[in-house]
Length: 441
Ligand code: URA
Ligand code: CA
Image (cartoon, rainbow, N blue to C red; front, side):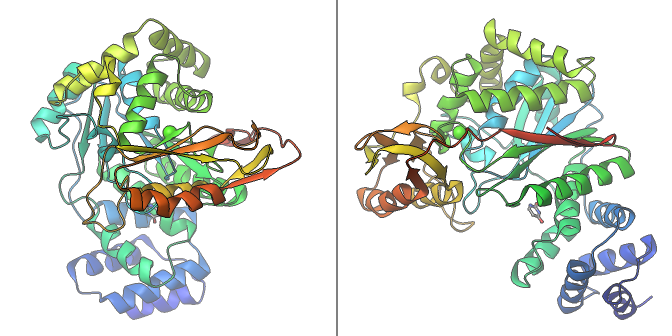
């Protein structure tokens, strides 16, 4: 077999065999297939596409390019939740304790934030003392005893994906559904999930800006899961504006605490209940979605979900008193209000612009080496369709550096479009994709 012939086959619209895909990915991982050939291959795939079988084979070839995590010592069905990335997406902070409180094991491996989206690890680390570096034994022990643990990715998972992503990033081949789907699923499968709930974000703050593309990406990922025998469900959800109110690490921990007490933002609560109920369903802890949803509501109402959050924090070296006293969380020195210049209704909020603004303040990373400031971020007060008066506060900037605050002030202002007619509240959930097919709500 020669890489040249495989590239030419895909260039001409051919369908690659499993052997051809494995040959290419193995060779690329080991350095025998050079970057320029793999880049040409990525472009051929970008232009010609891949069918579901090829995409599943590419995914598994990337899974087998490195280590895989064996979660079998953990009791129960391990359901992983993955979001394609959003702004102020506080769901994992809420879902880990909530789903664990219902009895389903949550063995969460998360990443750090890069670019305009925050990372779940950075959020948990805003809790004083919280450690995300656990040994494999500690991780498994914590999930078996507390039912949840959140750690950074360890080991050499899907190295072919990492190498390929670096090439895609500089060859204009990132935005390609089979490549994105195989990239995301290879990491989830290597991390040992038995079943996967995908939160596919759509809209201005998301990777996929249109609903059709979001459904296509969801379909491609569900097809991969189905092909390799892992139950996978994708929910398509709005990222046309930030989720909840808070964007920024400690600010989102506070928002998660509110949500676990039933006093969080309505959209965040609704999304957590929806995703959480699907997780319980796949974990076989609930027989149907309604039952799962009701169970989760009870766990919020009776305080069990919040109690579980304390247990998780304690088990990972964090200070659980911040859960009762969120004012002990890191706070920013300055709070600067951004006010509406005219009266009207919020037409739209550019989530990506707010994400970039939060990153500039220090809530996220501009490069891998950037150090995150847990205290800073943005709290939006007005969301799409809300009425505002002239001079009313749209959002509050939490900053430790006044210069940076001044720099983002205009961005925050510009992220809001105010107009005279009231637009309808945008829907939060657009549909779901499972092996049974696509359901648009
Ligand atoms: N996220 C990933 O992990 N991979 C992609 O290709 C795109 C987004
Ligand atoms: Ca939020």
